[in-house]
Amino acid sequence: MKPHGPVSRTFIYLMLIVASGLFLTPFVWLVSTSLKPVEQTMVLPPTFLPRAHYVEIDGRRMEVVIDYTMNQPGVVADVVSGPDAGKRVFLLPDQAIARAAELNGAHRVAAGWTHVTERLEQGAGRERQPRWDIVPPGAVQSEIKFRWSNYPNALASMGGGAAAGSGNVSFWVFLSNTLIVCVLGVIGTVLSNAIVAYGFARLRWRGRDAFFALTLATLMVPFPVLMVPLYGVFRELGWIGTLMPLWVPAFFGSAFNIFLMRQFFLTIPEELSEAARIDGSSEWRIFWRIILPLSKPVLAVAALFHFLYAWNDFMGPFLYLTRKETFTLSIALQNYQSQTGGVQWHYLMAASTVTVLPIIVLFFFAQRTFIQGIATTGSKG
Image 1 (cartoon, rainbow, N blue to C red):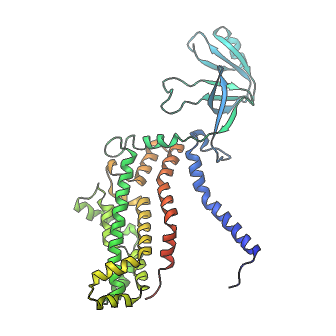
Image 2: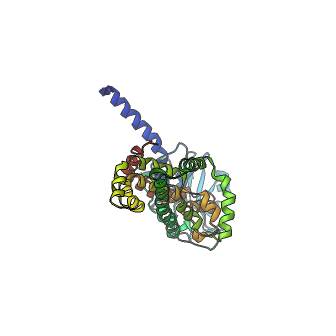
Image 3: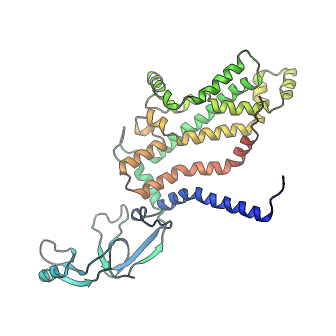
């Protein structure tokens, strides 16, 4: 193949960079939104960097929320008597004249001034009403500020609120449930699929090819067709409301992983197995001592595939889990979105970032093994 010249390589790298940027944009938006205050999450035009706004109110520099820009002039004053005593109010000029005896510290504001409100962080200062003011253009100072407190606040509130089963459940319970499902599922996937794939790849028995074709045919059966029968089986077993329906099926193999491992086993020289048989090794010893050590890449791929699937699985937990203390992260995140009404976007994005970050880190460190396993999976047979 003719090697690419400098111009061609530059163009290819440029296109790859652009494509990578497009694919990374949703994740960058996810992380940036998780570090913003709620009022900056859904603004047009969108901003990627979270900002904090500061003004001086009553001689103090404080962080504020920009509410809106005034479209007409008026008067801001403190009410010293009457039903609104102790409050700061905005009045139109004729209203201010009529209530002049009740007001103190009045000052005019022009159209184009900005209405700002003191920001009170969650759990701090909530016992009092935030102060507000109307300030002239240029009085608001802005600077970049990442709100790392969104993460502990989101995780703390993720298990709260009314939901199925009991009341508050810690985020760490959801995480431990997810890890239990993933780890047990990975163990079952690797063991069961490797054993079945070895039988299809290295053993000769009547009907082997027909059974393998039947196994591949199950790939065409969509999961919705199996939902009701599986639910009935698990209900009869008493597993509804437990984690068992999510990891026990992994010990019975899956067509895709069986196919993947079989193809890899076919690439291992048959002479190794024959030599072991001559030395008196059983099929189980050949499988355990020869085939599996040579198949680490494909085993890692199958384990990674199932871990990703189990971590992101929503339909299974949605069908089988009925108590909040058994929720996995995917269903807990959906439950959190429901209980907040989808309004606390900064907390929702923080919880989502925590949920997807382990998967990204896992793939980052396992990508070499993953690519090697896919590339070396042969098509023999």
